[in-house]
Length: 99
Image (cartoon, rainbow, N blue to C red; front, side, top):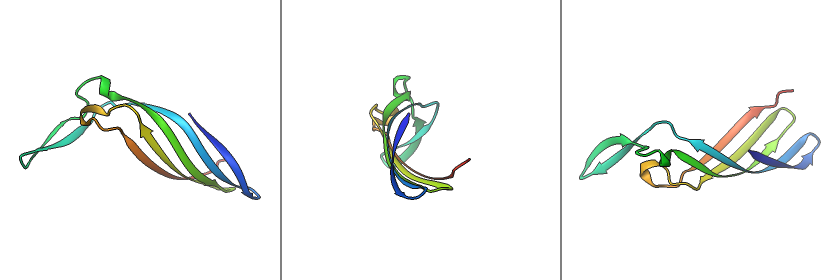
């Protein structure tokens, strides 16, 4: 669920500020592990607990009469699978407005 605040720039054009929450559940995946110069593939999710993630989405965007541009950052708060890293993703979207 993401909320957007529109700041009018011109007629039919807006600057957007996005803020919201997300949750996700990982189904499968592999990760490369390197030990003593040997790389092996291992399951990303070694336990059920590491499959779930939730976090915060922030972003900015520009809304025209026909096209919407946005840049968002997803920052997870749960430890991700066997890598024990907190997930972070950058999303850039360009999409037409359907009327």
